[in-house]
Length: 401
Image 1 (tube, rainbow, N blue to C red):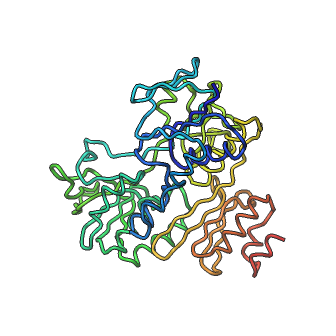
Image 2 (tube, helix red, strand yellow):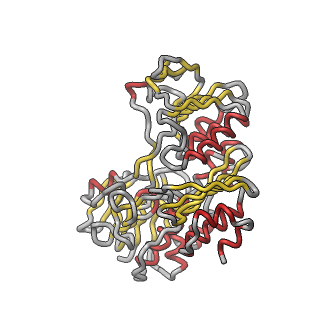
Image 3 (spheres, helix red, strand yellow):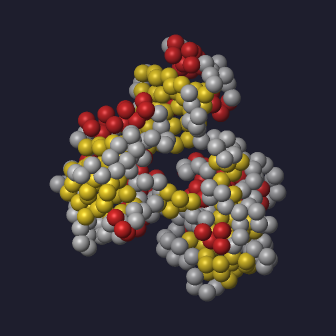
């Protein structure tokens, strides 16, 4: 018995399966996914796909023929309901069981929803995570419709931008003092806020939601300051939680997701985890790090595949992220946790350089691919660049010398 079972069928799962085959693993590989479709890209869902610029066929990560040719079994529309780590066996929602030599969790994360007590269960209240989520809301993206976005993170802002481009009336509310409060500096947030307001998005910061209104479907919202807002539909973008429920039920240690060691192993023998669902040793406040990005999903999944094959490598993340909003492409390199200084540059576009104790740790670049590229290379190469150098160097490429 040399089957590898991958729980999940998203970007991390597809990357792991492909890497295993590329490394020469010739045993059976089975991906188990609860969605009824083959692995696909998620980032375009809230961008090009929602805007109608990308068809569903372009979302697919691998062709149907590839899965067959590579001998990778897809169990789609099926969930794992039980894992016996002692017997090395999983039970599926259709009653089938699979024995495994190695098991990997690539289960991703689940969007947080509003409680039913404040209207979270009303019709036309959506989250953005799956193809089904976006397909359900797409018919409402019509000129003149009124959209309320709850949450000023990247998902909410991207949805707001698409809606406004399609002619909807858009209001975004953020309970925290400003948008992007958890993920970006005030300077980046200000640039994104100004962009949205110029395009006609109403952004309300520091104002919480009291409840959504309506009988069966949402008709509006009551804010904590007493204001009421009409809405034909609502998109919730208040973060995600790692999908670790089945791992917890199996007795696997979870801490901000499914806890792994530096090589991707969990607390159970022959069980691994990668991607949005996994936390690993890092510089976070609790000594662990969990990254929600395509880059991390691919890189960590491929490293776990190598380690399943015996490589014995530690995971050293090289974080990167992007967000498309209106005519702005925001590209991010590095991790900005604990920054104590921001340096702003205006070259091709705008860029914001994060420093901690005098060392460059992250860069946000808006319509400035060169700043992103230079910052990413400096961070990944471990080169020492001072705030003063970033402020005064005329040509950014000189920072890499």
